[in-house]
Length: 279
Image (cartoon, rainbow, N blue to C red):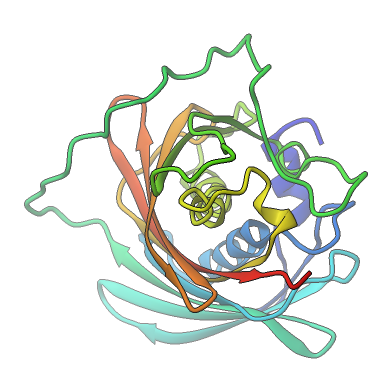
């Protein structure tokens, strides 16, 4: 895989019936990266709605760990078709069990009043294209490739993990390895995948562990995206995340994805499992 376009060519679900699709995963990885399944469900659902409709929100639950060696079956339920809105429910299955389900709402483009927060202040400038020395990612098993590299996404952490407790917020620059085609669906799929990269890790900033995965059993439980504005995901976007609360072995995170010129592209939210490992 040399670009994010290559990644999409491999994982894009193939239509087998009017509302049935099958998709593959990238290898090697121990379990399927959640952002991949989010993007695949969105791409499958997109193929069942008119071109005049675009996804404006997505609400999902991670149910079971996915097997990257097994094809994923995607069942799309066209539960609503309206004049200005449509809704699709998608269930991803493996081994005759649901591993992920999501509801996606679509809306026609309409004019209306608008307002928006200002882009947050940056703790560091955007990365330079010729200096990739500070990129960080995550692996799911020793010896496997970095998931960021596997999925052809680049990240520059602004907020690094420290051994002591930190403020409950973090920032990263991200982009898909491009160039990507001028296709809104491709950029939206890239945003959906990128949206699952930083939220879970944010919940560990207030806790004094430089390597949280040694101390916690962690997994994404649910995920939500609100798509606000078209963005070019092969250009740097700022992912600004915070974590208002953790408790009961669960952590809650929020995120905002910003273009370099201060346009809010999407908002996200996620709750994650953060169970302390027993020694």
